[in-house]
Image (cartoon, rainbow, N blue to C red; front, side, top):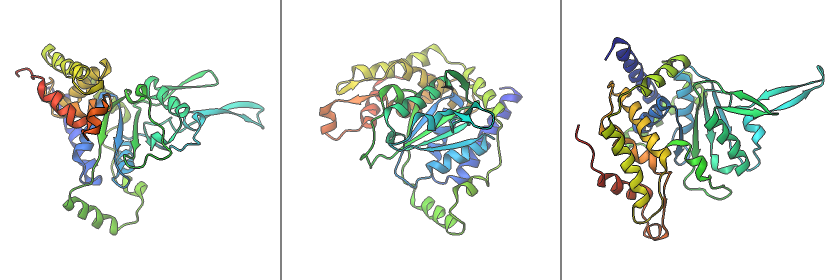
Length: 321
């Protein structure tokens, strides 16, 4: 590795330590979010309220020196509330553009499944194209741009099912769970001694990266070497989901791309300039769990996508290193 590579690896270690110092007890989630950022992807985070999803998004924006925005998705949210709109200025007698909250570096789409399909489609355009169209005029969002969307796995009343096309735009679906007892005690002690203000807590972080540095890290991740055998392994896992008994809908080619891009990010985070099979295997569940649909029989048996996918992944032989 070159001196620049070592410097980037040190920056990523500092970024991880900084986020783990504030978002306590969620090291795996933080690792996955950083990997998605390096891969240039968006993340769906599913977990019950109170597990620091909002704090994580705010801290990530602060740590990369970027702008943070939050949208609380509700049934009456309109596409213009997401992207912005043209409004008439009485003084100048001209229309001017009002940019929406998507013009940021890290966007938290809170409880995304509470908004109707039309509003979800507006966010879909931004996620895919990194731009919005207002009154026929395309406007690019700042780079780097990343969406962290949240879902509550318990409350489904008044929610809308996300279309498969939009779910497929998320490079990973991350599950966030309750922290261990020792971490929960540390969180309680920390919060008991301060005002419960997430903005203030996120502001305690120092910027580790700058937006331009993040873009350079993404470019470096894309240059990580992938052996053809590793690519064959990732594709084999994806294709196996389409033939596995009990899976009605398997993952598409976008899943294979996601696996390889995340594997490159994983290698960069580990300080390597090449991908190993474990880079693919460690993130396979997060890259695939939202891209498959189980059949009725497996659902009635109480099996989860993760349980089925674990068998799918283990059935594929990893290439020898």
